[in-house]
Figure 1 (tube, rainbow, N blue to C red):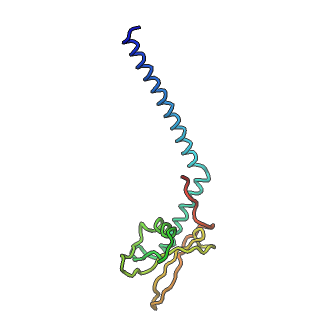
Figure 2 (cartoon, rainbow, N blue to C red; figure 1 turned 90 degrees about the horizontal axis):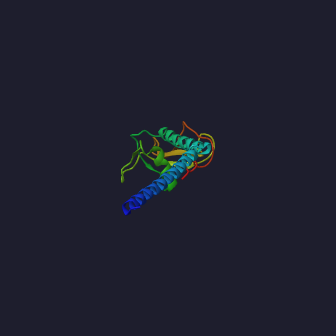
Figure 3 (cartoon, helix red, strand yellow; figure 1 turned 45 degrees about the vertical axis):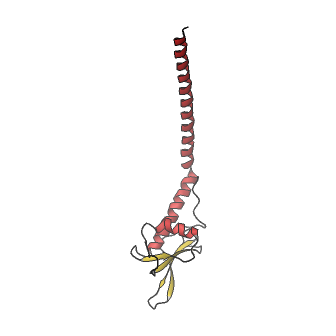
Length: 156
């Protein structure tokens, strides 16, 4: 066998080995991707996603029962990070935040009170001035999601 033929045969064998390894890796990745999609379509994950969507829709609806998009509001003073995240996720796309240094028409908040008429136990609140100038606390209405606690965390 000539040197040129041996060199050509070695290159061909190396190419076949690389192709087989590459196809094997692609097959393994396709299997992993299929398992991930199957896990995301499991009944429990779909139910959790529906509950999550219902919760944020409920918070949005309750906020809309208290304010209009043109009403300048601020988040309640002393709101926790979790409260701010929930309110941002539910209403930040349509509310008007009061510019810094100005008095808002109301303070939007989220309270956990439990019971019927709540979003998994939470209710949207608005602290605003009444007609007589005194502060009043109104609670949102128009939507509820029965249950307790925050919506389930999404799978990672």
